[in-house]
Image (cartoon, rainbow, N blue to C red; front, side):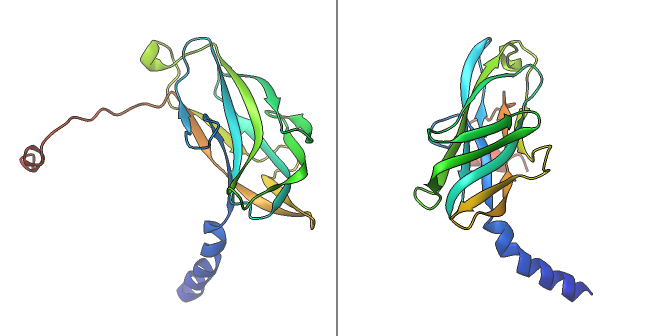
Length: 182
């Protein structure tokens, strides 16, 4: 029985490692998944898909935001059709022309305009380690995308971004000082 479970995990591992992912980034070039807004700041979040490996022509997802953060608007690429609401029940977006999932390896699915009437703990506010997550929609219970021309549905793996991350301070020490601790 143990061997069967191990064999099954080994067979499923490549599919899990190659799964497409989706997340909210705070830079136009997808690299920063954390941000610390100033009091009453308007800022942007970019929803990117990675690893679709097809001509992506539709996506379905929902965004959860922490209390106190307001979504003002959502913008999708030209030629796209957006149905639903980003928070409840979720968005279904079609893209035309389909987006190339191979080059450069990521696709901009939506641009979200946020407003922060509350601010970070480090600035005297109450917000600390606040998650912004990509989750399945309420209507279908799915977090998925479609590939053109076959239009088959594939699952996304949703990421969580952090507003007002709790930074851990470090100290500059020599290697000798570190060894003397033990």
